[in-house]
Length: 190
Image (cartoon, rainbow, N blue to C red; front, side, top):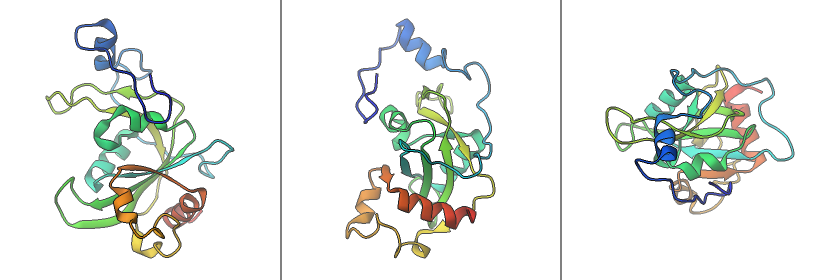
């Protein structure tokens, strides 16, 4: 179980009922169905006294796939990353490149949305292999446009640090409400 701050207890191993249920998706509201498509977030986006804002660093091709499926996945599918997110939290994706380790530079915010009120779940094996990423359901904002980080860099709080590029290497970082609002306005005209 996660404490919500990134630490996990050991996942039960193969062969146990709990381990099998996690691998098959049993117990998840969408188990046995095709993963859902993204839908627009409610007008006004995310706000509230306990709302947190996240910046996930993911290749553009993986962001597009996540938006298509209506899911969030971060830090190479690690459970702790998606369990830090709570329903109503805001999520922005920054894509440094087109592909995971290849392709042309993108250096843009590529998607924005809000975490849905559903628990994190472990997906079944991907592409016939043994990779089983942890995911959260997300309502992505329809019509959001990619926004180059350079256009906002002078106004963002997280880019004021001299080593802000190294901070992004963490894969998932918490954003200030100021930075989230600035990025949201640039991507959606809200």
